[in-house]
Length: 356
Image (tube, rainbow, N blue to C red):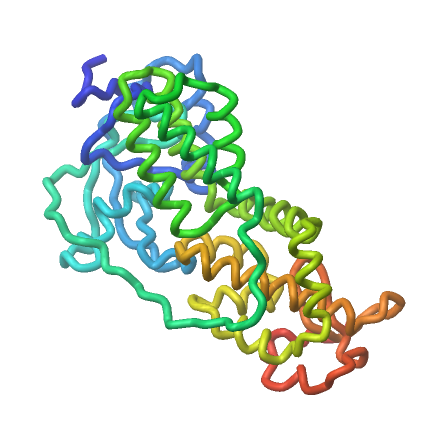
């Protein structure tokens, strides 16, 4: 089949693809039944898909990311524009006066399990508007940088040294980096991953270029519902079992819950409210797409852990709650067991669970 700007239709080639847009998340939408046909390693090149038109438009239903763009067929949603590709199109749809962009499928990325599309018309360069979070502060205790994030930082630096030619390719470093980087949802980590993926893709070393595509595949899947639920459970388990966090909860065992609740409610983009309401997957997904600074995420998790510790102290283990607050992770706080009834002040009615 003919090549298109260095990209071979229906197969992945490890070269940068300028102005090409990846459509990801196909398994959630109308083409979910065609995944094997599209991306099986032994699937034949199929002209059925190449050349089809898709219609890219803003996805106002995707509340986690205000810049989200959905790809539609003529009748149904197909997938989302990959987060790393949003700067190419989100600004055009948000500020450029267009309701949709018509694009043609020019390839199938078997590594990322994504469609590769190219806009039919040349798009103007329109910067993607920045949604600045409301200023937020927390002056209480903050846990130190978790070792799992420090490890990901170190492995990322080793990856950069390999790109620069200062270290030979090391498969163990690549593998461990891919596993560890997903633990950090901060905007700092996202930007580092994006920069590293572009550097890897531009490498003349085939193994490093392949690692660049693998990293993009990891990034594509980070915001999924299943991944976010697993992420929360894993990160909370690691943090709660760390000596640093256990020491923090002991040092501040007498901390007043009310200021912590106030700080959680005021955390930008309603992320703290999602945790208080027990919407753990939405809490994690909002956090991922918000790209908050790592310093704020450390403060947020310190609040979550201190609140969780305080709630458990207030609730005797023998009590089985009938009415309470959904605290995340399946925990509920029974109203009648609170030692400090003042902590109920201004708690949203949505968090009071009916008795059945």
